Structure formats: C-alpha cells, structure tokens
Amino acid sequence: MYSTGNEPESAYPLFAKGARFLADGHPHQAVMFLSRAKLLEPEKASIREALGRALFMAGRMAGARREFTKAVQIAPADDYAHFALGLACERTGQRTRAIAHLKLANVMRPGIQHYEQALERLAG
Image 1 (cartoon, helix red, strand yellow):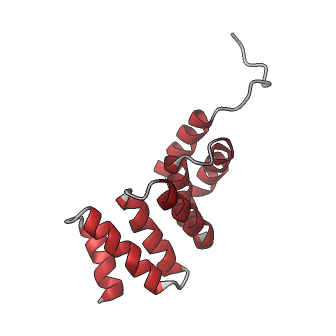
Image 2: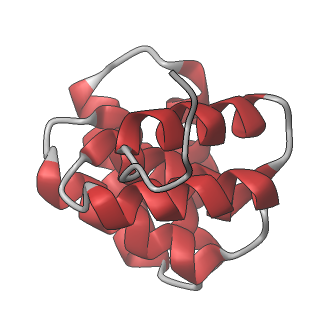
Image 3: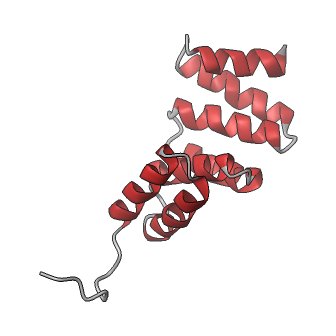
C-alpha cells in the first residue's frame, strides 16, 4: 500500500528518526523530529529526554532544562534525566539546583564515573 500523505503521524517513527539524527551527531535535525513526537505524546519521558539531549547538544540550554525537568516529573526514578537536568541547570546558572539533581543521580546509580565527576566539579 502506498502512502497518500494523509495518514496521521505516529510518535514512534518520529522518535526513532530523531534518535538516529541524535546518535549521528545532528542535534538540530533531531530537535525537529523529536519536537513533533512530543506534540503527539507529551507525557512520554523517553521523548522528553531525547529532545532534551538534542536541545543540549544544539546549545539551547533553557529548552533542554525544560525538557529534562518534564522528564524528571514524568519519571522521577530516571537517574539519567536527573543527571542531564543537573548539567542543564549548571549551564543556565542554577548551580544549587544542578548540585541537587547531580546528587540524586549519584544516589540512584552509584559508581557512574561521569555522574561522579560532574558532581565533584560543581560541589568540589
């Protein structure tokens, strides 16, 4: 069956395409697809986290912080989301908040070297 272009968009193909662009080091393209996926599935933590990563890599720190904040609200036990939120908070001048999220990430998943290094750098 051929696509007529009138079928409704689905979040998963958009997410997958965005994730591929992200993995290939093309954050701006990833943002386009992941933003569309977010519109379709706004409460999906994996989409918010990937979009946050893409925005972070694209240098759009305030947007990254917003997406990681939402990912943490949706999935509070996600250690990586706390770690990423900590980094985004650091980059946007929210040092105290950054340290809090980095501490959480380290407690949730002890022994992760880049989590520990980020916390040491900030809390030093």
